[in-house]
Image (tube, rainbow, N blue to C red; front, side, top):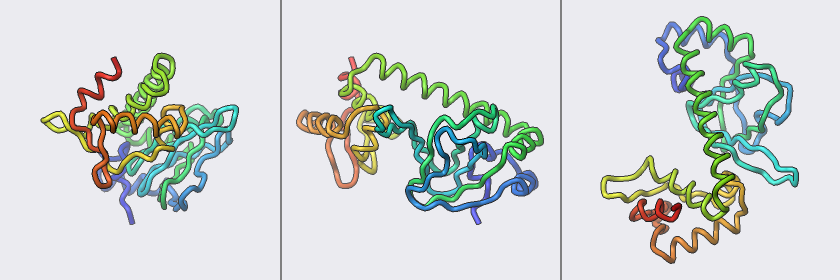
Length: 222
């Protein structure tokens, strides 16, 4: 059984504290593509991701899926509704087979009150969400579709950049997923990738995306 300490907000807890939290959760496995949280739904459970990953999405008025974020092992979703009691603000789908630990709002509140380090980590997670949302708003407001694609590739490259300025993103981002993240079409993503490849800025190598010099990529953003 996967231990709860893989979850970021619980990672500071000792074995006794983890055993206490375990009393408040119920575990469930979701199959690929399954809906874990329904947008505008009135459920308010918190989901801790023990294995697999989830995709947080919303939908435009025309029905186009917009990916807000992908969250892997150790992440947490659903805590906003548990805190304020409002309807869900987005839909959450399983990416691959995904195991979660679920807590109802009362249990979530109990765990936070019993373990102050959990409360602090939840606050930090909320701050991260605000920053990510602000960044997305700025991108959509100030960058064209092509530039948003380039900006997202640059963000993916930054954490894996080497001392020589190169980076390899693995696996290669799926065009439709990248399009959803930056609110554009799959065709636009394909055109941008093609243009970057012709300039030698981004190159496909095996199952990865090699960027010889991420500074050249950043320069395209002005």
